Length: 483
Ligand code: ADQ
Image (cartoon, rainbow, N blue to C red; front, side, top):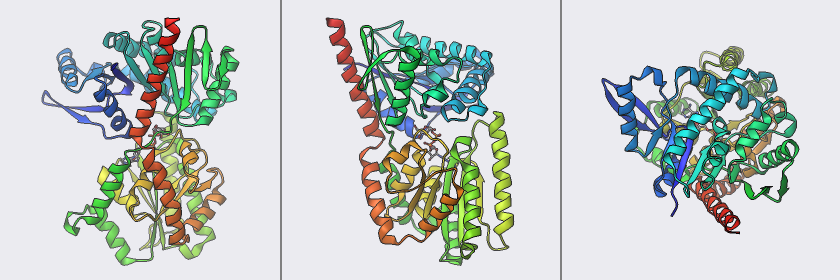
């Protein structure tokens, strides 16, 4: 069986260095979970950045880290502070991210950022080329590494290359704005298999390939001279059983073992048994529609004053990209809005919005998912959105309602959610009312369908389907070469 290697911007471990002692902390995120099963099963390596700027590490420490990573079959690509600034915070997060999420007004067009992007992509490709052999398979992830497929294919054509994009692929009219549009498409076309979360992103990609490069497309194949590139959609799932089992255990724990958060939530319900909780969880990112959500919640309290004192919005925002200007401004805007809503509708014993600007441990996330009556997921653009799936998996009693943006990739799999346009605060306010007053039977009916679907296509199914397609495309290539 051919080896399968993974390449992503970050390795699936973080590194903690204390008094020359190096500790590897495995990441528990969805991608790490799904991919770990793949590269371990197929004897591959995971190539990526270990998360520390290389200029902060001495040569000895760098070597020690590399040796430690070998134990986990990880290969590190070292990046300096300047490279992180220009390639990661720069071209990846100040140019591609806003472009692909339709925030054209935020795009940074600095050629210096592009140059760094090419250089660092080449660094990842070189490290991968050192690690892999002809005949191996490699699976490259996400928008930070769009040029890597071509950089590998051009040097080792016998390697089967897969690429998966975790964010939306924008329509041609948006994509064409970028000066380096052709280079990005060319970079992606080095892959033999290109995957997106949804058919719409796939459709946009085809339209860009046709209009910018003039290549032939037939069904889901792109034909370029003697190559065939397969393009398909693979909606990413979550580790469903992990969320369901953790939620089940949360309810079975004796009171003294429950977390502080859980005890506080119980106290809250004890004080007001008829109170309802709405949950909002995201990275603090302008694509997630957090201000709209707060405005809609305020509108809801304004239109339905009988709910003042009876509904609380718990809003978690994980700090993200805090050095990029638009993120700093967004943080300020969100804090002001939270202050406004609490100032307008709050009282001594009622705080309408509980706002947490921090990452939460897994147990607390589960407690919140399983305790909140409504999940408010309103991104203005989102490749998929795993929070919506995690909420569904954690609802062991099969109640709960999701209010979901039609702009999130996950909306294609969640027809039973209350669908909203995130720019329509009136519609969101109405949906909050509908969710809070929805009979339990109807909640269960919707939740059963959602759970069935999300459980069936979990993260393991997602990765195995992608690997299956990689094998298919590998055979296709071999048959072409054999002719
Ligand atoms: P993200 O934009 O990061 O991912 P999402 O899919 O929602 O968005 O994943 C966020 C993850 O962070 C979830 O697993 C969630 O549990 C966790 N999280 C959120 N808030 C947290 C908090 N306060 N504390 C701890 N954990 C928290 C990108 C794309 C998405 C796509 C994924 C996967 O932008 O569209 O769904 O990749 O492809």
